[in-house]
Amino acid sequence: MHLEPLHDDLGATVSGITLSGDLTETEVESIRSIIDQYSVVHFPGQEMTDDKQLALTRLFGEPEAEHVAFGSTGTVNYFGTVGNVKDDGSTADNTNARYQSGNQLWHSDSSFRETPSYLSILHAYEVPEQGGDTEFASMRSGYARLGANMRRTIDPLFVIHDYVFSRSPIAPVNPNHAASLPPVVHPIVRTNPSNQQKNLYIGSHARSIVGMNGMESRKILDDLLEHTTKHTHVTRHAWRPGDTVIWDNRCVLHRGTGYDATRWRRRLRQTRVVGNEAGIIPCVPS
Ligand SMILES: [Fe+2]
Image (cartoon, rainbow, N blue to C red; front, side):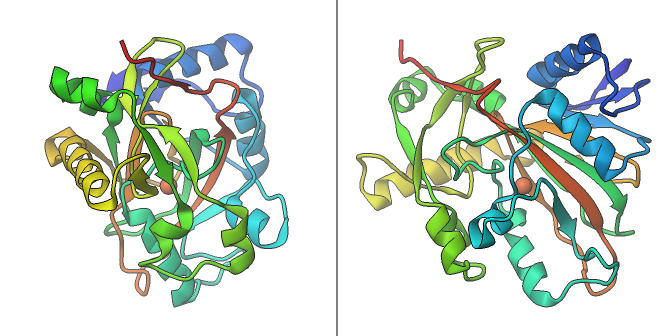
């Protein structure tokens, strides 16, 4: 494997390895350790299929059931399609595009679940000629840049994450789906158990801070988001067909940059790994 870092805060491009379910244990551990260190890892030129992607996903832990189908109908589906191309190859209607616009807000995948995602694995099949990039920001670097007083203030806090809250300005959520995702509480600072690095855990699903009034907690959450996602601290991935990107939802926020869905086709397939195995532990305030 050859590794090239992408940004001081996060990100690496890794070549010289073919991703599939046939990776050796040593290769999986190497990739896991690269993810621990770089948070976002780009593997260009992969010849992926859904079967290969699911087998790859299982090497890193338990695949996560996609929450829309699971919450709405109870169907377990391990893939989400990102973009505007439906399974039959036609392009989706505006409702789907509107729903997916929620992905243009900074977020950590499944932070609204009791057990959030550990990894997201996204593979690009069709990409627009313009737009449709994905941006990433390191919540570990963002935490490290906070002053000591601010770190002491926020270390013991807990945040309510709520999917219906984050989607309410965008599109209505199916009632069954909404009922399947009651608000959950996560610590605002988490620690990677492999390297003991602390990071913020916020994003668009973060509704409020436990024990604070709405205005007070909104200001802290908004200020932290602004602080951590300044453009100099963001790395932007311009997708090419064949790219597989794996990112660490425990310590990274990401967002789509948008594209003209009436003009371009965009099709990426996503799987996720449930966070309980290599999960995150709450920060113990010192
Ligand atoms: Fe996402």
